[in-house]
Amino acid sequence: MPSTFLLFLTIATTVLSYLLSLVSTQTLQALIWQLATLIPGSSAAKQQATHRKLQREVLTLRGQLRATSSQDEFAKWAKLKRKEDKLLADFEKSKKALESHKSTHSTLASTSKRILTTGVKLVLQFYYLRTPVFHLPKGAVPGYIEWVLAFPKCPSGSVSVNVWMMAVGAVVELLGAAVAWVWASTVGREKVAPLEAKVEGEGEKEKAGKKDL
Image 1 (cartoon, rainbow, N blue to C red):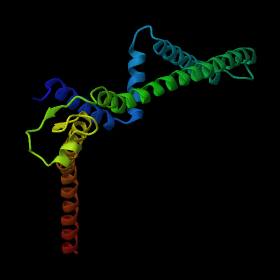
Image 2: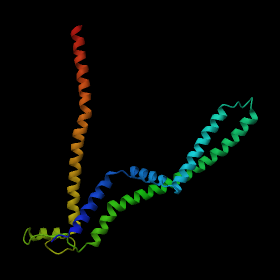
Image 3: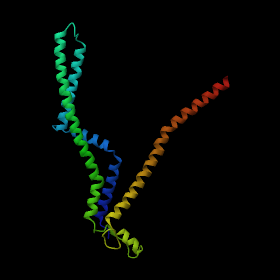
Image 4: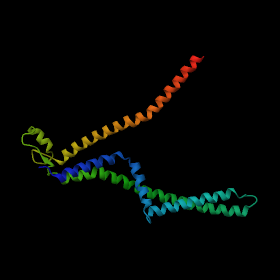
C-alpha cells in the first residue's frame, strides 16, 4: 500500500525544486532584496532610504553649484563646493554599505536556492532511505529490476524514495519542456504572424510599383 504522505511530499518537493531551478539566481537575489527593503524598519529599508536621500541631496546641490558663478559669487560657490565634497563622501560610504548589504542578501538567495533545490531532496532521500514509497505487485517485474527500483536499501519489490524522485523529476522536466514548446509555438507564432503580414504587404507594394513602371 502506498504511503500517501510520502507520495505527496516527494512530488511536491520535486515540482518545487524544478520551478525554483527555472528562476535565475540573479532574479531571486533581486526579489529577496526588494522584499527586504519593503519591510518597515529593516536595516535594508533604512540603508536604501538613506542612500536615496543622499543621492537627492547631491543632485540638488550640484544644481545649485551650476547656478552659482565661481567668479561672481566665489564665497557662496566655495561653501556649496565644500558641502558637496562632504555629501559625496557620505554618499560613497552609503553606497559601499548598501552594496555590502546587497552582497549578503545575494549570498542568502544563492544558498537558499541550493538548499531548496538540492538540500531538501537529499535530506528526504537520507531520512526515508529504508522507507518504500509503495510496493509493486509480486512478480510484476524481474528480480534485477526489483533490485534497481528498491535501491539503495528498501525491501525488494518496493520503490525507494531515491528512484521515485528521479522518476517524478524526469516526468516533471518532460512536462515542463512540453509546456515551454506549446508556449513558444503559440505566443511566438502570434508575434511572428503580424511581422509576416507586414513583409508580405511590403512585397505586394513593391510588385505593384514595378508594374506601374
